[in-house]
Every structure is written in C-alpha cells, then in structure tokens.
Amino acid sequence: ETGVTQTPRHLVMGMTNKKSLKCEQHLGHNAMYWYKQSAKKPLELMFVYNFKEQTENNSVPSRFSPECPNSSHLFLHLHTLQPEDSALYLCASSLRDFSYNEQFFGPGTRLTVL
Amino acid sequence: AQSVSQHNHHVILSEAASLELGCNYSYGGTVNLFWYVQYPGQHLQLLLKYFSGDPLVKGIKGFEAEFIKSKFSFNLRKPSVQWSDTAEYFCAVNGMGYGGSQGNLIFGKGTKLSVKP
Image (cartoon, rainbow over all chains, first blue to last red; front, side, top):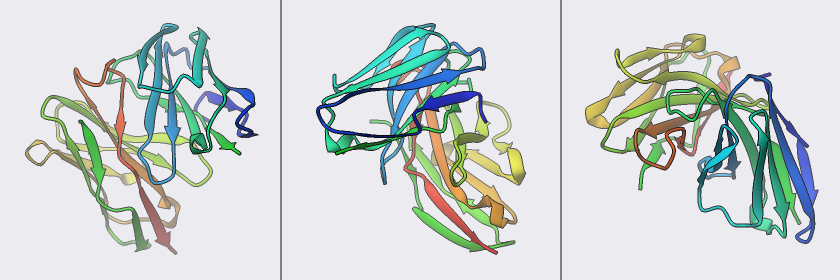
C-alpha cells in the first residue's frame, strides 16, 4: 500500500453514461495527479493539482472533468466517453508540485467503455 | 517534443543473469530522472531517482542506474536478477522548466522483464 487509494478498481460503462473515479491520499501531500495508462503507450499525464488548484491540463478532452475539493481527494468525472478512452487511470500524489518530489501512485481504475 | 525511449519492450532472463535496461531521453537542459517498477497486480512504485551529484545511483532491491549526460541516458542495472524481479519497468524524466508545472513526469513506454526460475 502506498497510501493512495482509488475506487472503483474496475469500471465498465457505456458511451452515454456518467461516472466518476475517486482518488484519496493519506500521506499529507499537496499535489495530486491523474494519469492515463494505455496498452503499448507511455503513461500520459492528464491533470495536475497543487494545493487544490489545477496547474496542468495536458490537452485532455472535455469529456474528462477533474475535481479537487481538498488536498486529500481527487475526482475524475466521466461523460460521453469513447471506446478509445478505455485504459487504466492512475492517480498519484506528491508532497508538492515540484520535480524532485517522489510521486506515489494508486492501484488504478481499469476503465472499459463499451 | 521531449520524449523518453526505452529500448526493449520485453526482456527475458534466467535467474542470476545480469540485467541492463536502456533509457534515453531528449531534453537538453537540467533533468531529474526516475525508474519506477510495477510488479504484477501492484501499483507503480519508485525504484530509484537521480537529481544531482554522483551519477551512479543505487536504489532498492539491488538495482542501480547510471546517468550519462553526454549520452542522454539513464540505464538501469542489476548484477543478478531474481524471479521476484519479474515486473514492468518505467523510466521517467522531468526536465526543469518544461512541460508546464515542474511536477510533470514524462514516462517511457516501459520494459517488461520476465525472469525464468
């Protein structure tokens, strides 16, 4: 266990559904991240939050909507997704939004879009 | 665009064999370098990191990596692998001052290591 939990671990949804992914960290960190891990592709950074403020949106389509109500919780709201959005979505946290801070990863949510 | 290349997609070794996984990055400035490992069914975890100082970095479980600035490389090594090292290994780079906020990591595609008992 890294102190970063993600729910659900698996999610199957249709293209018209709305669902949310949840991430929680128990490490006292102030920065949180969403990554997308697709087969045979590098891990892709999606969003970065530092002290609840979004500091990075890596050209992510608007059908992905992040929310960070506090430094311990991060959500990814999903709506009208496409089959190519099927992937493992990883959450990570670090002490602050600095390059020398180690990022701690959660176990991921395996998303399948039908 | 900045990128990270990992030369091998899948490496198969017998126990006690030596390991070297290649990692090259494209960025001309100051970099911080990381190797992460993902064991089957487990989360990504940090194996080792380089920020400055001695370019030979030692990590957990007997792994080490050498930063060669002139070659833009950060290869991972282990003298004698064990079956329990079977995992996927990811090289990641953070270039100071690029990619938006400084916390951003650029990952390679990963190398799967299978160690035969």
